[in-house]
Length: 533
Image (tube, rainbow, N blue to C red; front, side, top):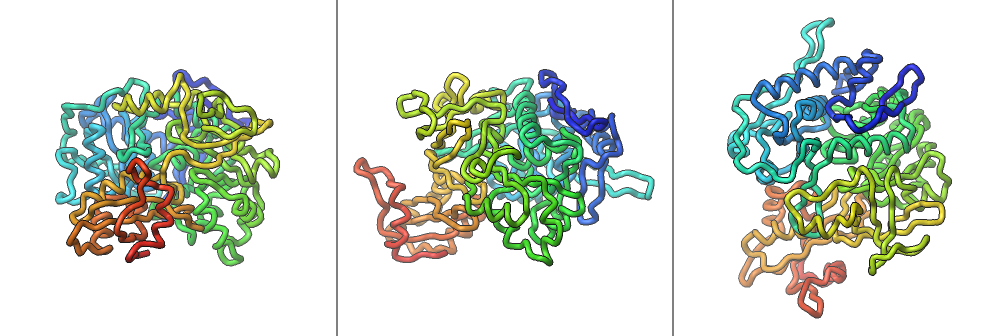
């Protein structure tokens, strides 16, 4: 595991075998305790590594005092806040397995996930009212108490009014080395579960720190949400492991209006985001918005969705910094490959660089490895690749082969080892980096009275990459309206999953064998009898 060496302003390898996520900041806190780890809130309060480490230790002990034990699963639903950072690191330090949840999840979907993973408690910075409770799973409230005087320190309070629930059927397949439970979408409607081990995480953080040569002088702004890999691994954990500082924006989420002040406050040397956010920042980069700070970045990272060469060129011209595209998936503990700071213009604009600690194969339909320049499916193997899906042996067998994970993406590797991603085999919709299963949205729509048939798909969009659209065949005699469906979806889907346009049609396109022909769905937008959006 790479740990900051502040005397030489570098990072050094300490070995990953015994590394644990809950101890990720211990070395920095012991070496230079006064170094800034986090900048938080509207007041941009600076939290030192020593203070953060103390908060983590206290929170870890508090969880154990309240009856949780090593190996228990807890759900964590919080915004990009110090509450999330302390709760996550404190829980895994106590030996718990943490499942980060999207803070925007509708309560009905959140309750289903809490039950599915067998969580004993839900840790949250925004508890729901009793009418939106999570069954018999208690909500333990996380909140910080401001210093009472100039000499006192920030405190983290854990408000637990109920005891942790007893779980009769805990999630099967977990091991002592598991740290986090993550969710990944696929071509089946229900997202799959997998575990990130401490070994997976150590290798993933090493790969990012090494690729970008992160060191204690590097600082960043948390643009991406921290409940899944992009923000959690690339922004937060890689920075903390190398002794840098992370600014958590006010209100716990990205804002183009505050980004420049945030970047200047922390002295950001880099940031990472999806192409949609890069585009928004480019459009906001004017004299009165970006100011002189646009030229201060050492590099800019882009991941979680395809970045066009034209947009990469615009970003580089606007910020006077190289754009480093990266590629990964939840099954590889986020990053699998990346363009490096020293890469040439062709690699930066047309590839996702070289593997970062993994091996890559391009495989044809017969299972043979393709030569350089020939398109096939991207297969990956290495210490960051997870062991499979929890409780889903069929999906595991179809995706994991002799230590390799089949990405479901098409690509090529050139003679220099650069990987280029050419498209998706899987039918996921990628809306600004959020991966959406069409089947999951279809299942929700089909559960509404008056819907006879439904097809959900993505349509190209210049800002988000894709937007979610739906074609509905109404049941005979139904007077179903778009507003009815939208209201229903807002209750059972995450905001980014809700279709942004609905078309009513008399029938759906089918293949010769009678299955839905997804290749013709976009054309059907022209034939719908009435549409919205």
